[in-house]
Length: 108
Image 1 (spheres, rainbow, N blue to C red):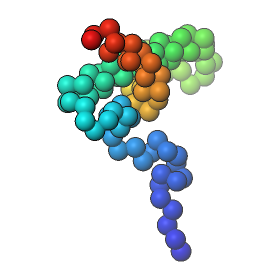
Image 2: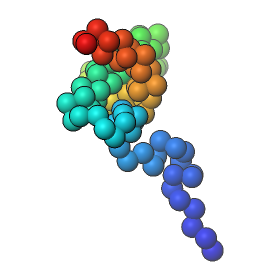
Image 3: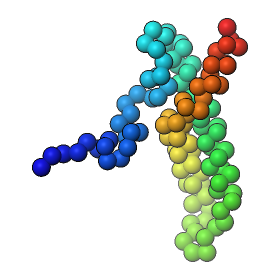
Image 4: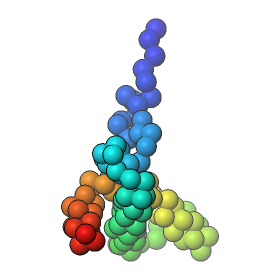
């Protein structure tokens, strides 16, 4: 019996060890540049995905049964925040690469 790695079952994102923003930077970049990239990816990704989840929640009405009331709404906002963080870590750099390049050109 052979064991299958968990990453092969779940997908690529399950085996990511470093944030994608750190992995995409060349090894020679200074720590300040790496930190700037991490913060840029997090803020842009969370803003984009947070607004997307917020808009999606507005289009869906409350269910007739099984609605948890105000407590569900509060915890749903926290869940959306966690989802936005994870989405920005997983696919944020793919979205923010062009924006970060423009940002660094303006800083120079």
